[in-house]
Length: 523
Ligand SMILES: Cc1cc2nc3c(=O)[nH]c(=O)nc-3n(C[C@H](O)[C@H](O)[C@H](O)COP(=O)(O)OP(=O)(O)OC[C@H]3O[C@@H](n4cnc5c(N)ncnc54)[C@H](O)[C@@H]3O)c2cc1C
Image 1 (cartoon, rainbow, N blue to C red):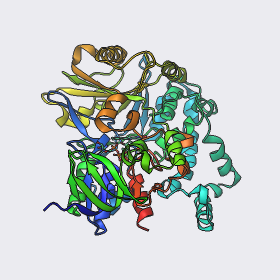
Image 2: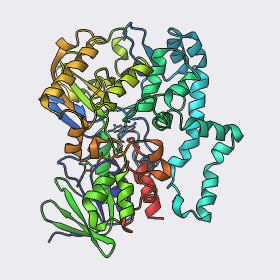
Image 3: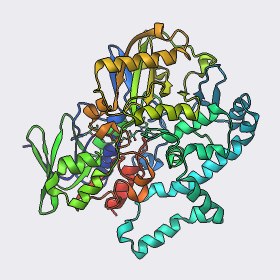
Image 4: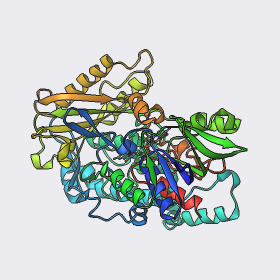
């Protein structure tokens, strides 16, 4: 007979769900996890986009992984190999005067000095400043944000402790953080740099995954979020040897070893509630499963509005949920290539890195202008990697893969519908841009495939194709993430918890959401 009663039901097979399921099972709970797709890993999956060619679905590199995940799940260095290349990013210039970002900042300064002596002189002070301001945020990333609506004495005392790193810098520390967070990127950059290329490269860090231009308020907050563990290697990028889906593969194994029952091809279509408590889920194939606790790795729209349903939502909760901004802004374009591409001004042994095309702040703002008026960027911000160098199994016979993230490609268009014709136009346009930087690029292409935010929503069920299950904006940050009444990984339903990136501390392949949630609900 099928066991249909568990201590915990986990919905979704993404990174955070897998971590949560493994940790709960490690604590001797019976756990079952449901994933609607055939494969687990969510956004960290790989897939075959053209016959014989694989790619990382949404991202080719990581910025940081919560060390608590590695420790608690006993993941060893030899299981998960992280590649920290010396040159971690190259910002491309049409004339070949690229900026090379090295782990050794002296070499980065040397590269910047070729375009601006003044900017090179300021680089060390700038990286120390960003590292200091983001270090104020770091302790906040490891805790449950306070419930600001019901703040008690214990919360108030713990908040004071959290402010210690800022206070230890005196009034200067407080001033730095209060002044910097709400700034727009050009305001911050005006205080430091003159070179268009350096300013454009850094500004791109502030608009990452946002449907906002660099001139929007608080893009510096997103910049700090993306650089929280970069230290002085601003815009850091690391690769997982073997592809990003190695991480979920390890987590699946750990979860199974601890006894988690994993069911793929099992879409949850309803969270069932009785007298204000949930008691189980219904699957698309009609099966029912029961549990005293439900964990969702989905976003708020999916968990609360779609799976709980209106009948289980209070009007004030519904209003707060409706106000969450998702607004997916990034498409992925994968190219299958005959040969290793040659990039003008870059040696072959420097190709295993992240390339960005963001020549100036104004270039990025203009890219955003088109989205503001309902279209997509004709000159987009492009970030690309030759992913077959890190993952040789992605392509065979000396073929290669270039995977690019294209921003801004919105979820919906004002006067148009997404169609194959429109997607072909975007591929042609981006190919034309890449041709300017990569020798003979268009003649090297065997095949290509574009996924828009709408495509991501239909395959991954992330609302509006948002990679972060909700944008990382100032009003959706810390105790306001995902909403002011649900920022403790809890919902208005007592035994329904959420561990997805819709919760604090937001997006990134780090797993901090799941670890924080486990600490909160098992304390
Ligand atoms: C390599 C990589 C690096 C990244 N780096 C950054 C970064 O630096 N900064 C940043 O802002 N973001 C980044 N992101 C994006 C994003 O923030 C992370 O992918 C995030 O961790 C994803 O969270 P998740 O895996 O928990 O959820 P998801 O990957 O969204 O997984 C959810 C899963 O639930 C399944 N599901 C959905 N509905 C149902 C249902 N009804 N029933 C059952 N299953 C369902 C889906 O199929 C999916 O598998 C990165 C992503 C990747 C892959």
